[in-house]
Length: 395
Image (cartoon, rainbow, N blue to C red; front, side):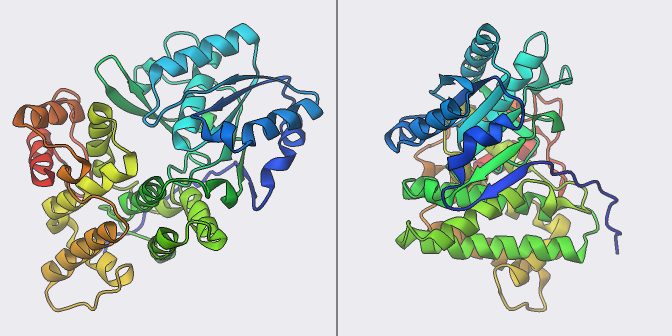
């Protein structure tokens, strides 16, 4: 049996969780010595709900100046990051407050890197340089999905080539994350369910690995997955269920703050890499794209870690094991896809409304392998041809 890995666990983000948690935002930011805040947000929902006005009023009451920059879209754009960097430098902002979900928080992190470091911020996402500083960032979460509010990661899409790339650095971890489940009530069901898949995948990517595993970490991971699956179904019919919203919101943070990876080799992450290229090319919702490719990836690689897939089937999907490990693993994959279907999520790229041509498949595979210069995954290392085969299976 493989021994679990040594690990470091670092989660410095202060969490303020519960109803009306956002009301003291001005007082909270003041404790960090901020003089001028960039309020960064996405679309009109923050304005329509009155949340933006309440935040601005709280900052004014606390004597803190602010500027605003909206317009962040899903799969956040590098052009908006550049706009934010220029605005912060011009206005001498010294703190960034992200109001939204993972896209807004990721964009805020990229702006923070860009303001605090010389040169092109995209260099960090292309792994050409390492950031040495980042403006302090806080978050008011309005979407439970990405976990960016407690993670060290950020994913940005460069419109020049539609390249979607991630960068991880502890410098960008949020100083605080305000989580009021009520702020997620108005989300459309598709966005809610896509977020639930994203949360699950952050744990599944770590759970399906090639290392030894701690019983404690496995237990946390399995409970998190079962909890999200249960409450995703509740929210399908009762979107204003506070308890279900709260369970999903907290799971989103725990799934991506490193907790479910303690003692592992870090996990696989091939499904995320496959989806990043779909998101870059077709602008699909991240969680939905993950659901569309996961089953095909799983069938392609499960023989390389059949015991973990069988454990997933038994402990998360609650299937009775048989004497056939292959049957157990496949039954678990099918049950996971059945769950995706039950909450209105896709299990193929066609379900996303996309019919891939062979040329598009090879373009996706080439981008995913960085022009045939890298492999992805750890359950099985996947080269360009493997990647293309999975896209074909997922069509």
